[in-house]
Image (cartoon, rainbow, N blue to C red; front, side):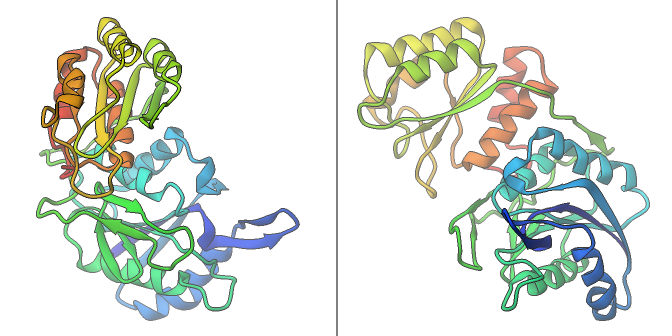
Amino acid sequence: MTILLIHTGGTISMVKSSHGFEPKAGVVEEFVNLQVRDSFPGLDIDVCVLSPLIDSANATPADWNRVAQQIADCHERYEGFVVTHGTDTLAYTSAALCFALEGLDKPVVLTGSMLPLTVEGNDAVANLLGAFQCVVEAPAGVWVHFCGQRLHGARIYKTHSRRHDAFGSMASDVLPIWSSPNLTRHAARSAKVATVAVAPGMMEGVLQFATSECDGLVLRCYGSGTVPETPTFRQALVAAAGRGVPVLAVSQCPEGGIALGTYAAGAVLVECGVIDGREMTLEAAYTKMVFALSIHAALEQQKSFLETSVAGEF
């Protein structure tokens, strides 16, 4: 089986420096040569290092494009892909790959670690070896392997900043894949997308600014979809509708999702055409908004894309 490892950086490849941990070239490559190839003698493994290596806190949609382009370019030559990535934005990248790679028919497995390969007692060895086992066994789609678990790439979220089992995922019987007969890579373009979380007594001018300046907005609501009932809040949503700006609502709760229209306190969302994000994670909602704006020019097409489950994200 032919596997391409795409190395982007992250904690897994870090070494100590005078400024703290930072990615270093050669760390992951050496581990592949010394341990992975011996552990999986039946695999033909190539390594692609995306330079510059980054801390995933610095990741942007341009980095999603770098990974997706590499997979698309090599799609016919390899039977599976492993992507090493920092944990801070790993959930964003995994969701982004679900929307970037329409027609993917190979397994793509992302992994990372909470402690680097260069540190004693790390989780990096188990995660990287586990990712290669996962790519052998997993069906086509975008997956995350972390702490012994195979997680749905469009439904994961980071749950802990330090523990080795740092990710959770909502269960789904739908594969993390955008089904299509042919592979099409969709590029994420530069779009002004904001996330705004409601809070008691929030400064509503932030929402007004976002709806007047952004191309798309992800609104993090209370519970099953409630928001403050104030004139300013309503005016901001009316302004977004008037400008043709899609607004996607998701819950601040990690489980359960939203159901717009359940409570009167969320009626303004329905009245202003806000899109029900159901149980989408923040990461999936944000990346999906970027791709909705990148793929479609018309508001109705953007809304239709956002309302349709593309890769099992809801």
